[in-house]
Length: 109
Image 1 (cartoon, helix red, strand yellow):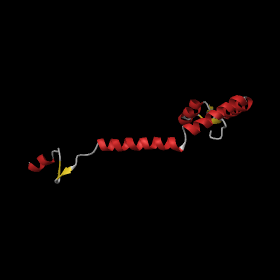
Image 2 (cartoon, rainbow, N blue to C red):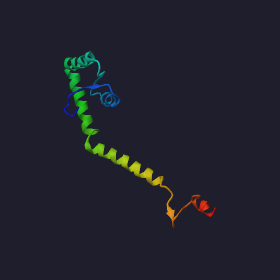
Image 3 (cartoon, one colour):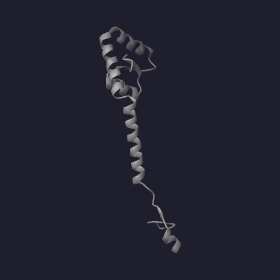
Image 4 (tube, rainbow, N blue to C red):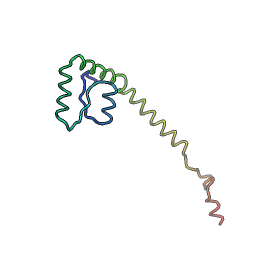
């Protein structure tokens, strides 16, 4: 995609979403050689549309699938994880006793 060439991609969910969402190629069944050949022939026989697909793919790579955007996405994941851990802290020991637990009651019995 980054080279500006339309793609013929295997029909897996992530590739389907990227290729069809950006209209930058053709998704085919990877087990169907005729479908693969047909997709390649479609691109060769329609060079204007193929060039448009390639340009859309290149634009998508430069705007969505680059180190900056991927880094920001990864930072958001880490921030969510840290936030989740901070809000779900286990009870802390206070002077050797676990606050708010039945441990004190168990010792007294």
